Image (tube, rainbow, N blue to C red; front, side, top):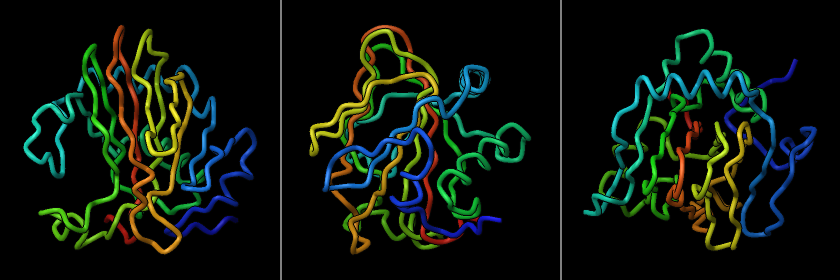
Length: 211
């Protein structure tokens, strides 16, 4: 039986059949196509459409148009979401208690999430509040739920890598440098949707148990 911890690794992820590592020495990032089936994606899209709300930010820094998508907090006690969480945990090698609740996002035409990192800025006003219980964010796992007609790519500007939305495709990355500090090379931009809609789910893991 595989023992899960609070940490994933490049060695573990690259051993997964079909997993591809993004060729950059500046961060650990991986892509896996067909992580979710069409049926799984469709069910999640329906749930996001039903329960969405305006997205929020830990620190908007006064820019009210920094993140213009809508968000859905997935119910972590329902069987299909439990199964999804277990699937992500098994892939990552990270025990479920170290994960935040899975979040769904919906982007309409013109909506985006401007360049940002997922880890909390130690210099930010709310750093202590967000990290005092569960610690810093470690790994991000994101899955695209649909093919976007035009736009909606995720751009990692520092390493000049743009990932196109593709139904069922998972992208994951380590938010830290080898010394454990936040890695600014993970800066990424959920670019504007130009035609159609974009749906994704995101799972963030922490240094300490979330619950």
